[in-house]
Image 1 (cartoon, rainbow, N blue to C red):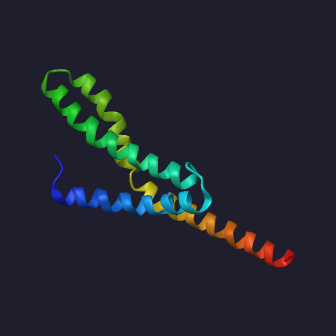
Image 2: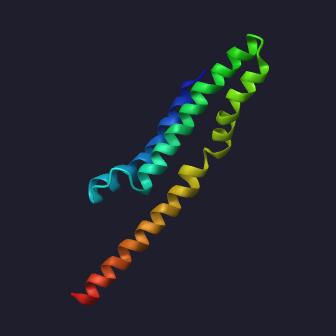
Length: 112
């Protein structure tokens, strides 16, 4: 089960991923741009972890270890990749957007 420290960590990391998504939505009007995809991917990873692992434990205790392993596999993969979204993909996406913004401003300055 989740402790209060776990819940705080999940909330903090969700905010880290949600802020660029909100900015993208606000400024560009895109409902599902790169930051939206990263936000929903991250949310899906946490949902898989929080829903499938306890379910797999209950099924394993009920005597079906093979089914429990099948259910635990997506959650385990999500657990392995969970740090990739806020700490790797998000900074790469931010740098990409900044480069595009700088290029567009330079082009406007050159033509204007």
